[in-house]
Image 1 (tube, rainbow, N blue to C red):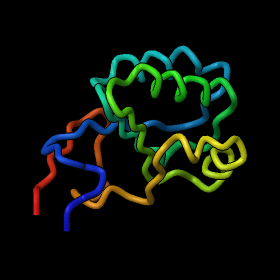
Image 2 (image 1 turned 90 degrees about the vertical axis):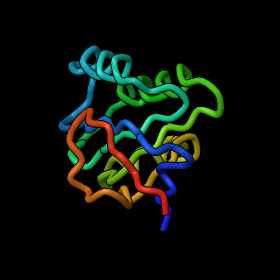
Image 3 (image 1 turned 60 degrees about the vertical axis):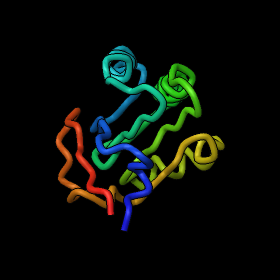
Image 4 (image 1 turned 180 degrees about the horizontal axis):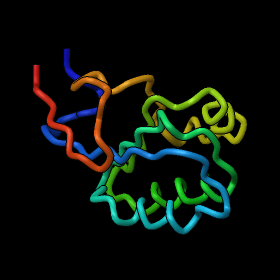
Length: 119
Protein backbone atom coordinates (compact mmCIF):
# COMPACT_ATOMS: atom_id res chain seq x y z
CA UNK A 1 0.00 0.00 0.00
CA UNK A 2 1.41 3.39 -0.98
CA UNK A 3 1.72 6.02 1.72
CA UNK A 4 -0.54 8.96 0.76
CA UNK A 5 1.85 11.33 2.50
CA UNK A 6 4.68 10.39 0.18
CA UNK A 7 2.81 11.32 -3.01
CA UNK A 8 5.32 10.71 -5.81
CA UNK A 9 8.42 11.37 -3.74
CA UNK A 10 10.85 8.76 -2.49
CA UNK A 11 12.10 11.11 0.20
CA UNK A 12 10.14 13.48 2.40
CA UNK A 13 11.33 15.66 5.25
CA UNK A 14 9.44 15.41 8.55
CA UNK A 15 9.83 18.16 11.12
CA UNK A 16 8.96 17.01 14.61
CA UNK A 17 7.60 19.72 16.91
CA UNK A 18 7.08 19.40 20.66
CA UNK A 19 5.77 21.23 23.69
CA UNK A 20 3.66 24.35 23.97
CA UNK A 21 3.76 26.97 21.22
CA UNK A 22 2.65 30.41 22.29
CA UNK A 23 3.95 33.97 22.06
CA UNK A 24 7.06 33.11 24.10
CA UNK A 25 8.15 30.48 21.52
CA UNK A 26 7.04 32.27 18.34
CA UNK A 27 10.57 33.08 17.15
CA UNK A 28 11.78 29.55 17.81
CA UNK A 29 8.87 28.11 15.81
CA UNK A 30 9.34 30.66 13.01
CA UNK A 31 13.04 29.77 12.69
CA UNK A 32 12.45 26.01 12.73
CA UNK A 33 9.81 26.31 10.02
CA UNK A 34 11.98 28.62 7.89
CA UNK A 35 15.12 26.48 8.21
CA UNK A 36 13.37 23.23 7.29
CA UNK A 37 14.02 22.24 3.66
CA UNK A 38 10.37 22.36 2.58
CA UNK A 39 9.48 23.31 -0.99
CA UNK A 40 5.95 22.36 -2.11
CA UNK A 41 5.01 20.12 0.81
CA UNK A 42 5.69 20.31 4.52
CA UNK A 43 5.12 17.41 6.90
CA UNK A 44 4.96 18.20 10.60
CA UNK A 45 4.98 15.50 13.29
CA UNK A 46 2.74 17.01 15.96
CA UNK A 47 2.55 14.08 18.38
CA UNK A 48 4.31 16.00 21.18
CA UNK A 49 2.65 19.40 20.68
CA UNK A 50 0.47 19.96 23.73
CA UNK A 51 -0.70 23.54 23.11
CA UNK A 52 -0.83 26.16 20.36
CA UNK A 53 -2.11 29.72 20.43
CA UNK A 54 -2.90 32.20 17.66
CA UNK A 55 0.76 33.17 17.21
CA UNK A 56 1.68 29.56 16.46
CA UNK A 57 -1.23 29.22 14.06
CA UNK A 58 -0.04 32.36 12.28
CA UNK A 59 3.40 30.78 11.78
CA UNK A 60 1.79 27.66 10.29
CA UNK A 61 -0.21 29.84 7.87
CA UNK A 62 2.99 31.69 6.93
CA UNK A 63 4.67 28.35 6.27
CA UNK A 64 1.93 27.39 3.82
CA UNK A 65 2.18 30.78 2.11
CA UNK A 66 5.96 30.32 1.64
CA UNK A 67 5.61 26.94 -0.05
CA UNK A 68 5.68 26.79 -3.83
CA UNK A 69 3.35 25.14 -6.31
CA UNK A 70 0.31 23.33 -4.93
CA UNK A 71 1.36 24.06 -1.34
CA UNK A 72 0.44 21.34 1.16
CA UNK A 73 1.07 21.34 4.91
CA UNK A 74 0.53 17.90 6.43
CA UNK A 75 0.26 17.33 10.15
CA UNK A 76 0.56 13.86 11.60
CA UNK A 77 -0.45 12.60 15.04
CA UNK A 78 -2.12 15.85 16.12
CA UNK A 79 -3.22 15.86 19.76
CA UNK A 80 -7.01 16.22 20.35
CA UNK A 81 -6.81 19.72 21.85
CA UNK A 82 -4.69 21.02 18.97
CA UNK A 83 -6.95 19.25 16.44
CA UNK A 84 -9.93 20.94 18.09
CA UNK A 85 -8.25 24.36 17.75
CA UNK A 86 -7.58 23.70 14.07
CA UNK A 87 -11.23 22.70 13.59
CA UNK A 88 -12.61 25.74 15.47
CA UNK A 89 -10.45 28.14 13.45
CA UNK A 90 -11.23 26.41 10.15
CA UNK A 91 -7.56 25.62 9.59
CA UNK A 92 -8.35 21.92 9.41
CA UNK A 93 -9.52 22.73 5.87
CA UNK A 94 -6.25 24.51 4.94
CA UNK A 95 -3.97 21.78 6.29
CA UNK A 96 -4.00 18.01 5.82
CA UNK A 97 -4.36 16.19 9.14
CA UNK A 98 -3.41 12.51 9.35
CA UNK A 99 -3.41 10.08 12.26
CA UNK A 100 -0.03 8.61 11.37
CA UNK A 101 2.68 8.32 8.79
CA UNK A 102 2.03 4.90 7.24
CA UNK A 103 5.65 4.04 6.57
CA UNK A 104 8.16 3.82 8.03
CA UNK A 105 7.30 3.17 11.67
CA UNK A 106 6.03 6.23 13.57
CA UNK A 107 9.34 6.76 15.38
CA UNK A 108 10.39 9.52 13.01
CA UNK A 109 13.37 11.50 14.27
CA UNK A 110 13.14 15.28 14.28
CA UNK A 111 14.22 16.93 11.06
CA UNK A 112 15.26 13.60 9.54
CA UNK A 113 14.49 12.68 5.93
CA UNK A 114 12.16 9.71 5.77
CA UNK A 115 12.62 7.31 2.84
CA UNK A 116 9.46 5.74 1.49
CA UNK A 117 9.29 2.54 -0.50
CA UNK A 118 6.99 2.54 -3.46
CA UNK A 119 4.60 -0.32 -3.59
